[in-house]
Length: 166
Image 1 (cartoon, rainbow, N blue to C red):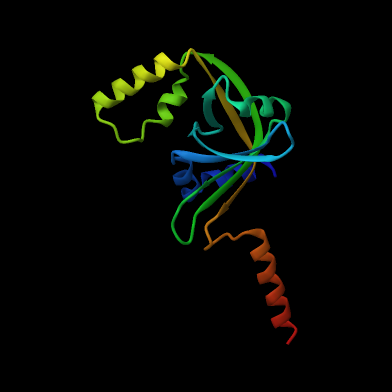
Image 2 (image 1 turned 45 degrees about the vertical axis):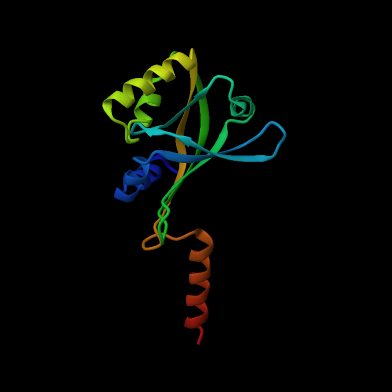
């Protein structure tokens, strides 16, 4: 997929709404070769998905071994809105708390007092964190109006061909 095609997908209004959500599902291959798919908070900075995790998270060893990942950001309504992204994870150890971690948790409902208490708790727990940065190399938006899963698109095309043969 060409960079301009990825940009077109990610700049669509529905994609932008999905990129403003709190959670993505991060899929990767674990060290034992089996798939993993974990929910994780994220932020979109306009060109990269940034997720943060503790320095002792098991996924880090797997991502160092195989940085290929897939992300899903979706809604819980019918029909769902689904943004699929693929890329490579780059790992960046940060002393203290990355700004993105504090930003990605900014949409949770907290009073100013609760936010101060939460921030103090985070700072006392983590000496460092790892930023997992994914630059999209492929993206697809499925909205079930203008875009469909590729298998459904293929079935519709086949149906239209059969109906055209009548």
